[in-house]
Length: 247
Image (cartoon, rainbow, N blue to C red; front, side):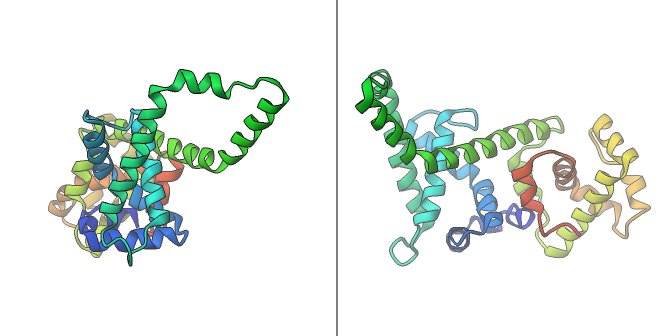
């Protein structure tokens, strides 16, 4: 699913609406796909609200992911025509809450500090009510960390998420062929070592094993490399993006 979404075909509001509805039903694959493909939107929204550049390393970005997830779980197409508009509203609310809490963080810490039996009970209740939020926060943090590490890995090959969105195969058959080539490289020790050492594909060797022209391999080079790196990684969440696409 990830490999089809990343094409950029899902930039339309209609498709975003449909993905949000599907993710809301509990489809974890679609949830991960939607979070991944919406990173530029989330960054842009967070930066607009915070009035400064926001990226994956900022705590505000984690808040934004949680807000986006909340928007998915509460989206109602009958009441909210556009999912992105609804998500923008929820993210704005969460970021404003976060900014306000940060501003008064020291006072809140003093208030929450247990002081006697009554305070301890209140502190326990506070934590109990926060379990779900904490779990979601942990998952969001894990996704954020994987995205950051994957981004760093892509940079070693002069690639970015924007590159992948722009260079991904537009048609299912082309995408399937590219994935197949990526699997060959990922599973072939010599090919993979060549890629990691030279930061490029052993195109001549690959061409002898597949019924795909050199021109096609070169055209899909960025996409193939990105999939190879993902396949041979330990990124649990990101690997869900290719689940169901692997031949």
